Length: 379
Image 1 (spheres, rainbow, N blue to C red):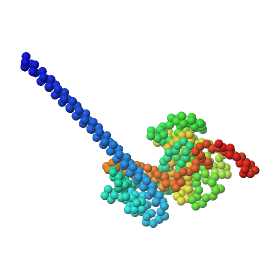
Image 2: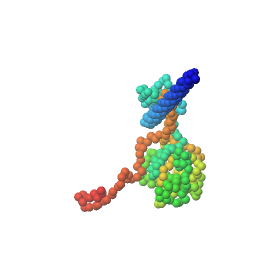
Image 3: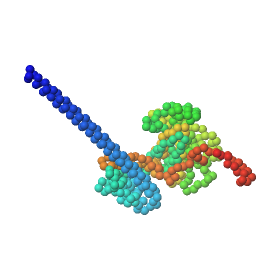
Image 4: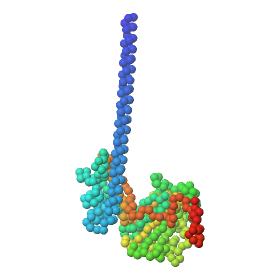
């Protein structure tokens, strides 16, 4: 009986030791798990910071590309102009930064060991861009229009062209998406109805041209043509070869008084739902006629694409209208690549109306015999 009573404390002590060991293991597991989560979060935060820094470096490369393009346009000739021309023609990394003359002219901070341009020598992440390639001539012009906005596009080709192809309403899920429907040919609706039914935008395409060597005001009406493009599923009378501006908006002395919308067949299966080819008045040669396209989106916004075509319907590249910049940024061991289209117009904002105000407009005129009779009746 004595020995049996002495065994109980030993059993109770073993249970206590087992309980303590269990809690030690549990706390250790929880501690290591918490430390692992903390390390993963810290690593993710560092990776995010590096990725953001690499993206910023790539964006800095895009800005340097703009400076290079503007500088190239400002030069009239000479060895520096040739150096820029060769650098802009480079298709291999490091691109324009491979020219020592261009680097010196743009005051770029060159890292010869890593073959890259440093953004700042004080950056903690060693931000730089390793590749900056510029494609001056592009096969198309891309843009996005909000409802009732416009874009003025110089139709400057690298070779003669006779046609302009306009495509709009991008059907991909990250753009305009597949249209919910199409209006009937010749039917127009109010803005709310058009937008609520998910119709693609109606476009207004206005062509303006003149000889670069001379311009006469009395020729302005003859050189200005407009056509309204209405998206439909079926019912278009436009031939596959394209529509003629003379048919829908004739020149003087018998110009159109009321321009009727032109129905354009659209398809949900194409990259852009709607597409039309417009035939111009003869070939447009580089250095000859200067043509502008003012493209306006009515009712709703839209993504669009403009291409130049020759007589055989082959693509003619745009000549420096919307260069493509390919920039690769680096921060430590993180890389980010940015593809960007840039515009280099001297006047980027063109007036859309004869009078444009941000708030309401009050116009109350009173004509009297002298200046003292003038009254301002507007609030």
